[in-house]
Amino acid sequence: MWDVTSSDAESLCGNRLANIYNVTHYNLLRDYLRPMIPDGHTYTWVHTGMTYENGQLYSTTGQTISLPTEVWFPDTPHFDASLTTVVVRVSRYPQDSYQGIYNEKSSTKFNGAICENEL
View 1 (tube, one colour):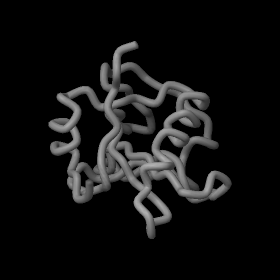
View 2: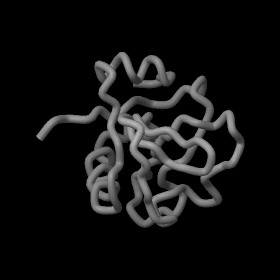
View 3: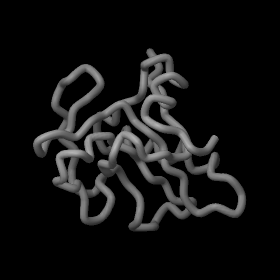
View 4: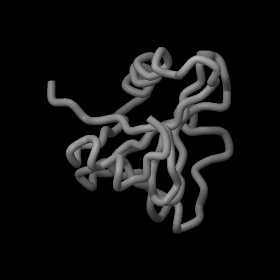
């Protein structure tokens, strides 16, 4: 899927967009998404349910989440107050340094969304 806005992502997931809880969860998410990258493409970008506001990362329930810099895309997060939507960029190549979570405008379109599932 392509051209997915934040509101499209919420609709696709039935208002249950996913959170990233820790480094292990982030790595599992990358491993899950990597085979879904279409042939001929190097990356995929997907919406999460997390937000970034006032220098803090928040889950869909409003709880603060603390993730190490290794999970963030290089040179992020951005400190522009309008960049509140958190997306994850995954590379086809596991060792690629240009992947991770970052904050962007909610109107920006990405490839899809990752939904939260109950265990």
